[in-house]
Length: 125
Image 1 (tube, rainbow, N blue to C red):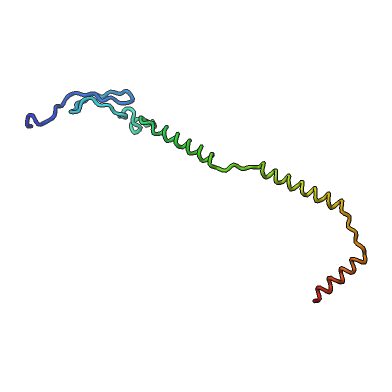
Image 2 (image 1 turned 60 degrees about the vertical axis):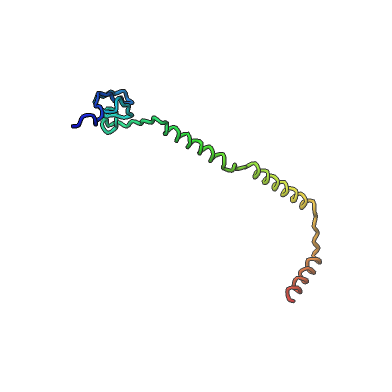
């Protein structure tokens, strides 16, 4: 090996987010990592969610906001307007019934025979 062209190779500590410390040699120096063999699901067989940047929480917050906006943008069903229309129609029907009860229609037998004859004449033409 040529002297003076290679970086310095020294002892270093690798510190994991779970607290595990590994001593090794490196040219960089001390390192910090998020996952090591002591906490990785492949080696432990346990599922563990490491979210250092808060991405999952941000995603959940956005989804909740989207749901709120969907509910706010949906048109509200107004049953009160329909109920008022039904009440108005009921009142009109009652008024018509009362008017019909007050009206007395007299039909004479002679008038009905004349009307029948006129209907026949118009139908024949």
